[in-house]
Length: 141
Image (tube, rainbow, N blue to C red):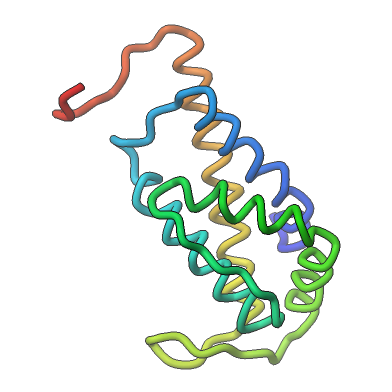
């Protein structure tokens, strides 16, 4: 899937993940419990550094996604335009702890992550709806 398609599905993907969390989907035994907050943080850094946005996150864990969405919705048009600018800029770079990287590539990777996370959450919700047993792999309930 190309970057434009990921961009077009971004809001939908975030809603899918948040709806699943609101419905009680348990992410404790998945990589999403750790990766989701990190990816939201990196997305905000990309938007702040690469597009001049002003996202400030204070929540921790998966609650960070809901906090991001609230800030995103307040300035949706502005943020979507900023994302489009980043995707159109073939030379823009940003600083990371590892050095300078292309801002466009950082954004594309985040958009891909949210697309895959939404797909994974949909599979988990389907399994839950079908009554599949929870996969707790040693996690005590």
